[in-house]
Image (cartoon, rainbow, N blue to C red; front, side, top):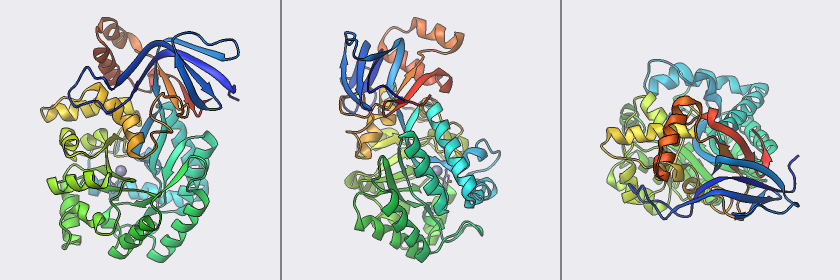
Length: 428
Ligand code: GUN
Ligand code: ZN
């Protein structure tokens, strides 16, 4: 059990605002070397240079990096075991690997075991909150909510809606899906740190009638989240144009039914045009950028600076099993390489902010998580600045803060994780 009052010593790093693209020195960065974070009843209540008095249990992580827990805004629980599957792009990959794996989650025992393994793997990677796709099966969402509550994690999920273009055992129908959503919302949405997301897999696997039902759920309750995929792969975009000839664009399929709103999380968004981008900004909807997945599935190179120009939020996500790692630092390293291929440069500040405060604020949860500010839940991770001789040698010669943190983000993974706390309780 966690002590009621405890204090953590380390190098505290978080953000007070959004850093500007390209700034390696930024007023938005808050770095307090060798400071103490005070935690009471699972919440951060203070940060200070001097050691607290003896009424506080002390955990001394001097010389280690303390960051807010990472927020993975797009990841698939049932796809852990198809991670690293060879040889295909999105549409073939779904048919050949992903759909068969998801069918197994019809079994409640498989759903519950899968949820536990998955959330423990997120925590072991330094991710303390997530927006998660389960499967079409109601029990797969129940299992995630239950397992997240047991760990104290902020979890946003909802049963996947798919009533066409999917194999037997993976399709629902509009009426039953609506009843399942309503029941799950009643039982889990707003309970503790659980929240419901209306979860449309992607436009091709829902009929227009099911999309309309999903939009009606969102319109009836503005506190609901929405998650889906958009404009990931060129063949997918062409298929959507064929299936929805009246829509102006892929994003417009969702917009017309009321699914693009301020609690919407749209994964990928690689093949969006200027009208789409300004719509996202107007609605306050976020794109979950999934660099590891986009590289692995050969989907394309996301225009991150274009998103900043258009003014819509970008968060960072693993998209496992399309992505090849749950580690958000490794995804930051991939995100840098994606921008490098576009002739752009991603700073450590923009990357880290997207995985912490930026994601939290885009989800309207900035008062709860994403920074090391008094009032936030104590969702935080302690990291070794370097793991192994190569990273240690690199860290030793880093001069200014951005150089050091950039090398960390490029080289770190779950082996750097020294401890992980969720709502003040140690989980790793
Ligand atoms: N589009 C529809 N379903 C999926 C999925 O499971 N993964 C990815 N990356 N894209 C999708
Ligand atoms: Zn995905």
